[in-house]
View (cartoon, one colour):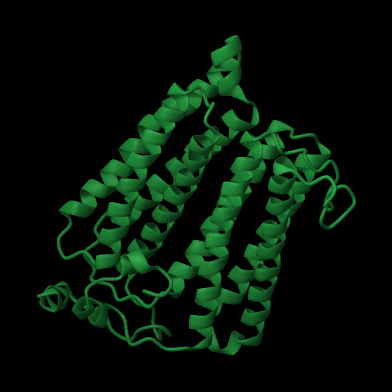
Length: 331
């Protein structure tokens, strides 16, 4: 797990109790690929945000090529590069997802039964995402299509993290209580808040409200959404801190969620006070929102795994670790 998610690495004694020794099985190779696709998708959303705030969404007037070329060297400038690189990253993610489906099909007898189907579902999502990406260009950045494009990207990103988190070797302690439900609720609320932010961006509602006093209701919906999203994440992290004998990954993810929330609020306030004139702040605000969704997704999956315990004949583990055993290992 440390190789795939370094900031979750617990002390050695706890790690030995929670996870078996590292191996190199088909499950491990597929898990590493899924993590790479997930991080590439986060980078794709960051580049997509930069493309929007730099008014580069139509820098390539055609699709899927750019000025009818794979690499438009003569027309290349910052805006064209952003849109071109955004498409290149999306194509690489699509090919990687296709490779994931192929690996799951090849190793299907050595994998859990749900994994090949999950890979096919992810491929369907990336296909839909590509279609929406093409429509954003051909429909001249129509706001509902742009918002759906972001929403589908977040869904694909979340799907990759769900698959990766389900494949992590993990032993439950059975101490999570209501944390799985809190995680699920916080994930849904923050996801909706990200969609509202995408709607504000796709309609340029903040600029129009601050400059022309138009579309203020769209911008205000995102501002009001800060309250339930913040409350949900704080309730989750507060419960994490108060839950005894919780596994190290869940504690670390809970702390990470609270840190991302603080940075997200700071970036949002700075972006608003500076009237969206500093593009890197806007990009960072959008990217941190996606990262917060991803952190909550990972937390929720691991919390549900902890609550449900290992499935019969689980390919990852054969036993669970009790709270007493975890406390002894930590000592």
